[in-house]
Length: 392
Image 1 (cartoon, one colour):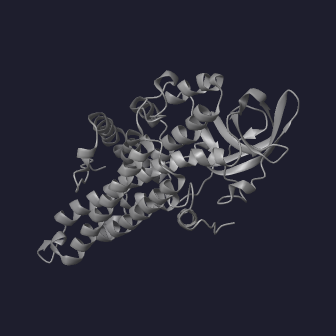
Image 2 (tube, helix red, strand yellow):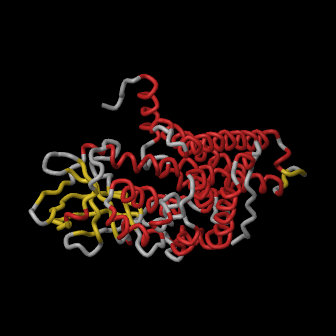
């Protein structure tokens, strides 16, 4: 494995917009990725194994629930710090960032926002330290972009709920200790339930043969007459808006994370273009390669400014769902295009595991689909500016 020589591009001096704490958090995460992720991630991806040894480091960085209050074990950081952590982790690998995103925004966030004080005290500190790992059950085999059509359901049996159904494409599922599961009650209203590993009838088969997110564990959640204690219901919000609120937080993190993948591809391509000599000069001195590199840094800079402004709005509790959708869609699309162009600059070497680009490209094919597909996010913007939903 080559040494990690990554240098982050900052063409518009965006660092000047960051506080000292935000830069410190980012730099600590960057150092950790260079030390602990980069040396092992290509091997993990080739073997299609999630490197569980990274969980401890993620917890120590504060990557699990960065914005969760300290009284519940979180780091108590602001939203831009959260975004920067996601950026740096995804610079290492989208799958590792997925693990942190799910833990923070899809497990800790709903327990914090929708749960009881008892649930917060029981689960959040252990999730923050990585003693517990969680997953989020919304997508079903027949209901992806239309989660409101879910068929997973639970019935009130007097002293407990009886949960039935199935979820798929669930990050962390194969080894998660708890799952925040969304299901309909007998009136058809969607509620969140905390399901714990070991409950009878609850299984989490792993999804194999993936060409993307190979260093992330993906699986299903199967509920066959699972008895869920009534105290495991998240009582403070119901309806489809509850899980979608979690997705807002996760999509925000993705908007930052995708920048990290793009920066890594750009940095790799720029360094390679300066070193690779053809026709007696570095290929960086040719017009076509300069065009590619100039367009890359332009798009990265635009995405950085978009994410920073969104983070500022998020810190002020003014960021809308549609604004978050725009940033998620734009930045992931940007990153995927940059990965493809960067691969071209490296020629045949770009497909090998000696460089990170092909791994990023394959990962981003998942990121552009999960937590709202590229097309659905476009329609969310369309609905927001016209007032007319096109997907109903």
